[in-house]
Length: 87
Image (cartoon, rainbow, N blue to C red; front, side):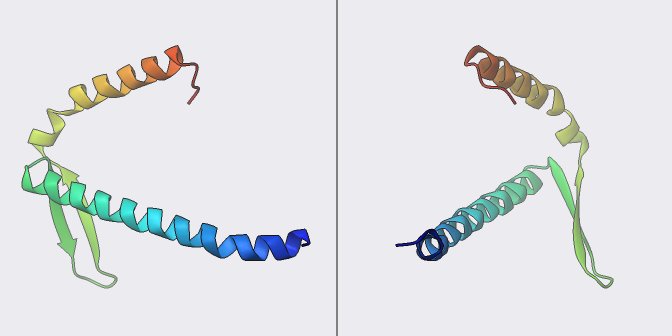
């Protein structure tokens, strides 16, 4: 079997897998956004003029979490460095 034919057989499976992962990721992100809004960390504003769009703003409550999130990010980078993983 030549390389072109092999790629033609392989590509639909890879594309399907990528689509599945992307749909799952989009669902998780939307669920997470809803949770952040309901917990008061973000404020959601829907702008109806064409084209319609959704804008998220960080609330005062959300701003108080920035130092904690920053600390976790720095800690993760330290762990990655200890494991020899570069960003």
